[in-house]
Length: 241
Image (tube, rainbow, N blue to C red; front, side):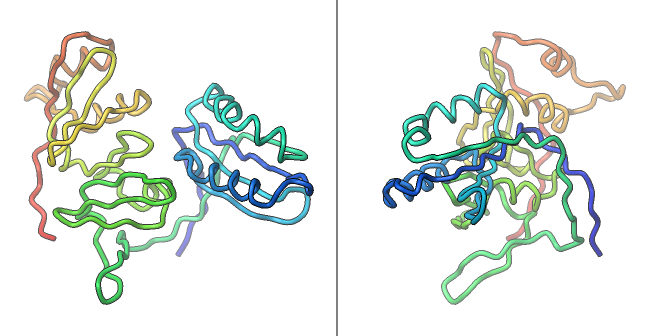
């Protein structure tokens, strides 16, 4: 059974439609398309016929990021593009289907099914995502947008647009001047995007016996501090792979 419902987004979504100049060199057009697709902010692309030749959907933080993207490709837009239009997504409706939360990864003799709950970390790498599951790592041709839809939001937290971590893989949080950092179980550090800080602190909140949040948590939810601190996280569950 499937349902169609509104899908919230924590990013500004823009759809950029491009019509190429027919005189533009084929190699230059192909390189321009690839450069666009290599941007982590690009979540979808379509080659089409008709009014436009190429359309991309990008997830951006704000209008400044959108204009920065255009500035980065100012030369290509001026020399290769005959016409361009941009539309900003106000609301998206998605068809949701009840399905098992799993992903298929390549293995030596075919493909192997992995339960999403066993995934520790997902990182974006161009047009690919790298899945970390215990000591094993897989590189899949997929998008972070699709992985966010697939993974359980109660179990996985978006630390940054290029990084999703299992709650149990987060060892601790540290507040440094002007930003937060997540220390992961493998010893690596991931800076937390400002747009995700409040949600992550709320998700990892450790309640006191009185049912209120710890005093340090309340202080840093409301204001910034220059003094480094650590934040408690939920106990780690032991999972078998």
